[in-house]
Image (tube, rainbow, N blue to C red):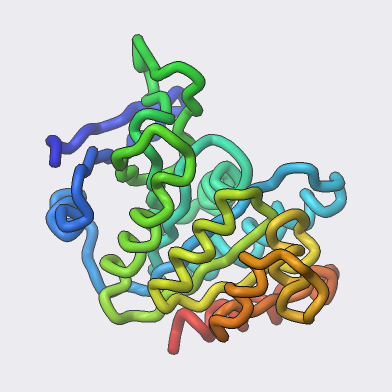
Length: 248
């Protein structure tokens, strides 16, 4: 494990970052970050691509009106992929928009991300999202290499307290993320109607898909879905469901 970094972003925010090499280093890295273990932990996986504008705006509301406020209310940790794209950007922007202080922790392969003000970022790298508070930079040269790290970090942070994965939209890597979280025995709630992988998984849960990966995940018994269309007018019920799971 390398020494702690302080990252300064152009929006004036400062985040802590650490580069870890082994899963066994996570408890020490968490301690050095100043994070306490045994807190409710919310994992966000997926994406926000190929959405109709109306669906995107609804997902944006989900983050601003439900996910960020619930995390703040419970003092929960939120763990995601940490890059300035898709659901990670929406989570970061929601955290800042509501003035929240909960720890928002990104997990990303070190060879795929550009650190702020880096003079020589890796080729084809993606910037880190500037409203996150902490980053764990993990080994890997491909997107998806972070999936086991993200799931394990959430387990270590929760340390027996409730944890929950919210799956929105997403592509191929989202199947890996879902599998890693199921293998960690973590409830996965799929936002049906958000498109792509989320809708394939939701289809498997009500018997309408032939995708083998989705069918296997559905058999786990810990993947459930919520139809976003059911909450178009009122996100309050959805907030209560998520809060209830993380408060058990």
